[in-house]
Length: 190
Image 1: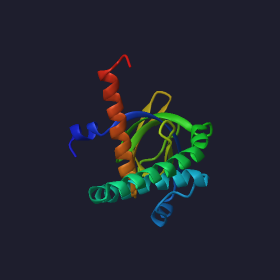
Image 2: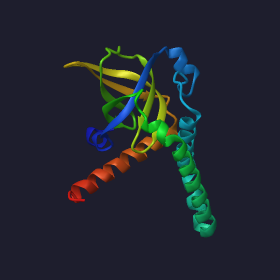
Image 3: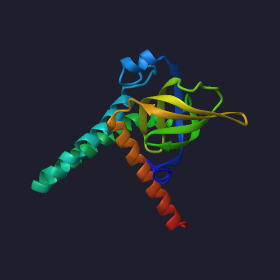
Image 4: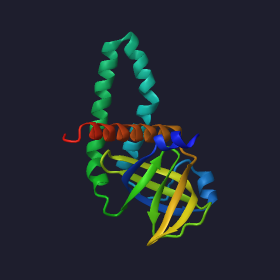
């Protein structure tokens, strides 16, 4: 991917992040990190969001032939999402146990300032929480860059074994954040 395209699909964002160093064997044996103590609500919302990406095209096809059925299914989906968001909202908004970081995010990885000197190639289990959108992800990553900066390190990580549904969620999140930023720039007084 050329540099301009890589930059286009990047955003600066504040995220609650927790990471744990994990051995390669853990990463190879598990599709999703199990190293974090997360509530079932966290996993429920993540799974529902992933299902949305998997079922969106089916809903559009139904809508072409049966718009009423499609409208009904969209209402049911909206109800389920509201219930799940309600269950998770207080949990994810209370990010006291997680440290907030300003990150540079793309669908392939992220960079963040860190106190720890993480070795290149190190596998990480990541817990990412985007409090404003209630998006929570559990992912594996590898350390690709480690630059010493004042007060710590600038760490660049690449997501590893990321499910396609998570990649789609991140891409949608990035595009929506970029659209909001463009809207703010066009209407600075709103």
